[in-house]
Length: 293
Image 1 (cartoon, rainbow, N blue to C red):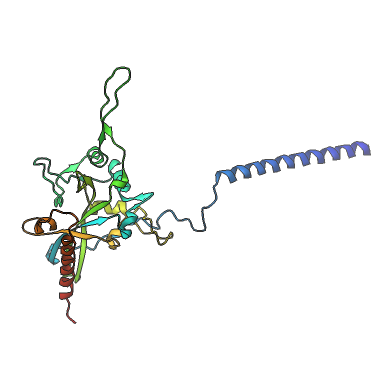
Image 2: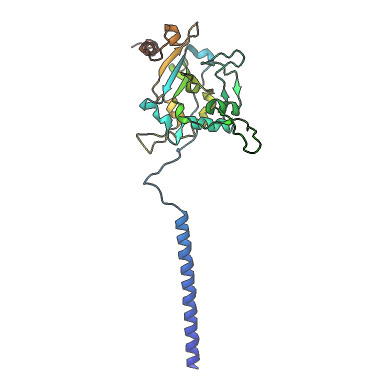
């Protein structure tokens, strides 16, 4: 009887050990699988998203409170070190704009008068809205379709490949306003246009109304070469005036840019830069003249 009882106890212990071993192997296998599915954190602080995508609205300005206003056009050259962040790999402004236009989250406006064919570099009123297809066509161009090897028929033209490196300049249209209610003289960006070389001249591809784009740009992180933990957005870059630019035009009765006003045809003529700095100084001098000490 004792032998039988001992054999039963041995069998129970043996089965318990086998079950425990099986459950341990199952837990080990699941741990291995979960470890393989979860990649390690790349760095001590690998921040990829911004802390908040809430856009900070501009203060309201009433028309009757605007005592002085001056419209100015600037160009931002991405070949300048301060502006190169707009063309950083993985965070290019042109990619952000075209993606939003393609998803119909943003409206692009023509830089040309389709009736007269005249270039409207300032395009004050954003009169001609482009479809997403038209805007992408302006930016990427069209390529001819290939001929079918069997039928010989040529396929319809299609969009070309986006060459982000072609967009090395952006044109900004802004208003400098004196708000007497808040006693502030400040700039407000009205529109922004990506530019590329067309027939030897830099021309805007389309215009974007900046107020419409602010919500989108405030949700896109800007690559900061000086601080990887930075949470700056594209909207911060423009609103905080972190860019370097030069003036190409100010509002004038003849509606001419600096080159036309001076009768200059050479785009590298230094007199254009001198005139740009003169206009900058005139704006700064006006601001200084507003206050008494």
